[in-house]
Amino acid sequence: MPVINVDDLTDKDKAVMEVNQLKIEVKLERWLTSKCCEEIKEYIQAGMEEDILFKGIAEDKNPFKEKGGCVIC
Image (tube, rainbow, N blue to C red; front, top):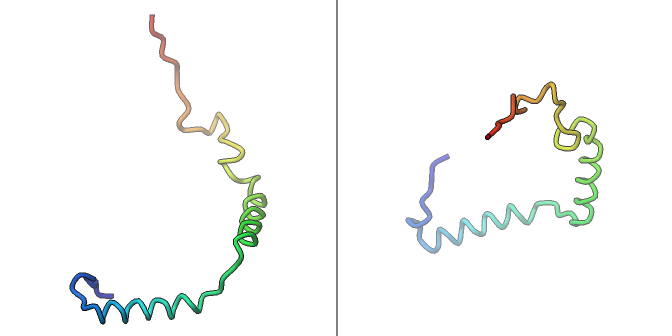
């Protein structure tokens, strides 16, 4: 797909591109935000057992665990 510099296009070309994009967007199925949020919430809750962000990393498997402390006297 060739790269198009929008600054080089005429106003008519820009309008045609915008109309084509709007034709594509009007065909998209729209969902209520409340429905989408519920589905996302259910998906996240279904995967909580395996999700490291929820359960954390076991101390023995944590590669970022501090090896030792720093003592300043």
